[in-house]
Amino acid sequence: METEERKSVIPRGALLVMGIFMVLVYIGMGILFFINLFGWASYAQPWPTLNYACGVILVLYGIYRGYRLYKGIGTPV
Image 1 (cartoon, rainbow, N blue to C red):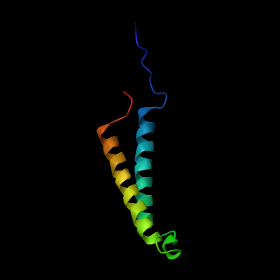
Image 2 (cartoon, one colour):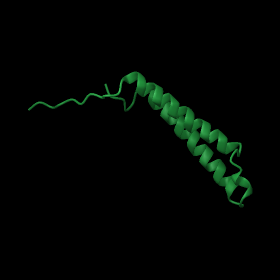
Image 3 (cartoon, rainbow, N blue to C red):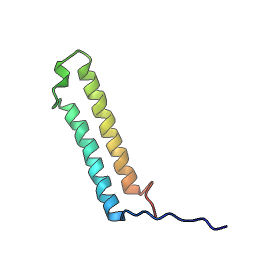
Image 4 (tube, one colour):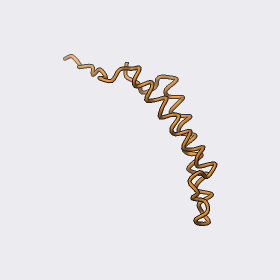
């Protein structure tokens, strides 16, 4: 019994560009939360803490996505 290999319809170059774009989006959004660009910290007391927490999570996830992209983890062959 043969197993059917599924090939990605999307070219590898497009996946690479999309991956780099998403890494930049995650890290950029995290930085925007750090500098309080949206002005949410002035609405209520817990917002500054939530801004920093969301910023840290987004930056760390962006770094993780960048590492996975660099190592080629999770990309089709």
